[in-house]
Length: 397
Length: 226
Image (cartoon, rainbow over all chains, first blue to last red; front, side, top):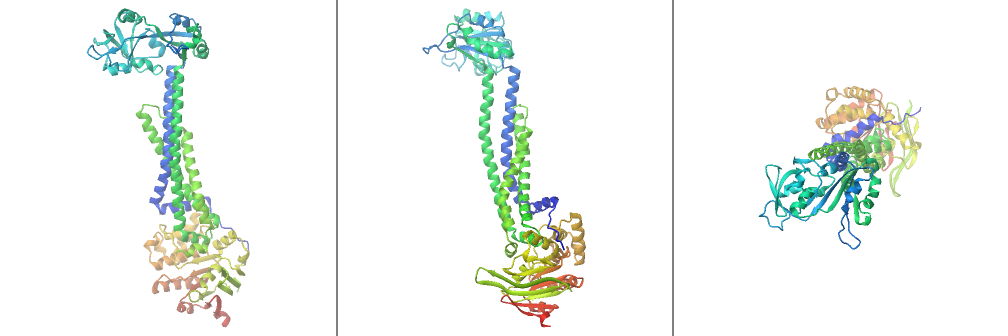
């Protein structure tokens, strides 16, 4: 007579694996929690970093990557160099250049009133600026208006966002005045923070003509802001130094502010790997927790193992049962962790006003990582369960 | 009558000097009800394990239902246990937190029958052992005697060719014990071959056949003596 083999149907594998868990709910919950925390940390970190990167890149899209700045560098003797007066005009003649604006350093400090000691400059600078500056660098006004051809000739000033805050000025107009170089200037506008050129945030901007007339400053050109055709940014960048200062092209610093933002996005990724590493450690600890619980479970359930062998289970059936149990634990922990991580990332991103980005690959990866940990953690306990001799298992009560 | 189980010159040694079985031969025919009795240390538990294929003998042969158990692989032995052998243990070994019906249905788990079928047969068997009203009760809601009845139901739900009961009354009071024994008799009357392992002489003497063990040897087999 042929003997039918022992069989354990796939749906019974799941059922049997779940039995051990449902009998010890608290313990199962706690060990799944360990995995959940690790996965949640990793998912949250990845999703937050993605959201922040997406936000940076979308602001970059809005601001454009075709802005270049030209500033005097240092001469080979280490002295501060200056740009030639003709530099703006020459740069403006480069074919793909669409707009050029200049600012000039003005040697005068800005104060809220005459009563402030002159040493308290609050880290603010005074710059002479072209009326075209906001259009070129993509600056917007929080309040008031920017300098125009008329106000550039009179004692009028536009404050950068940080400068306005430090001087304690919330609104332009209404005759609010500040003191620059001992003279009163009327605040006509306040800028929003300028993402691409943060140097403007701490500046008080006056017209070139006003600087000459009231501050006795020639307003040497200190920076050129250049918008070029987006197609030809690289070409323009390569000729800018030579065009701006044909005699000393090596004394000119050319930079592309959007590069700095991209670098910031990359720097965030470096932090991300650090946190990701911490999440991985948490996950590892969670895995050790599961292995621990499973080993204890195998010890405690020796009689169940013996009984199942007596009922006709093969070694493999027992191994599969305990491995399934471990996988179910870690999968439950993984799913809870993904949900928790996504929720944390969502809350953080919306508190920052970012668009929430939780990449599906991250969610899937989180669940898979949990299952992989469960498989590794469950392997040894499963082998122990499988190796236990039936008589050995039944004897131990 | 055909032999359900045939054991010849079984020996079981642990290490080099401990011998639990020292040449036991035994033949059990279909429909028999017998007791294997002996004091503790006589080797009766080892004999149960070896006959029930839970443990391999050091030497000797066993045939169960025509299968040469001593030559089978581990997987084949598991299959033999799943289909042809039932066990009842002194400690019941019911799974806590699962209903009587699910515990009994587990007796069929490794035969590959679908769950619906397993449950249907479990209910039927529980009614046969007089636990029809206790289908959904959990082990901790049952008395000791009832638990052992559930265990017996689990052992016979697959209609095994032979049922081994290891000290089935050992954890029960006299009355519950008698109930379980009469259940085993009842099962035997309807055709199940039952082997009871016990140290209680009284119980052993009440059964049709008695095999007495001492120091790993058969001291008396009432069937051979007759």
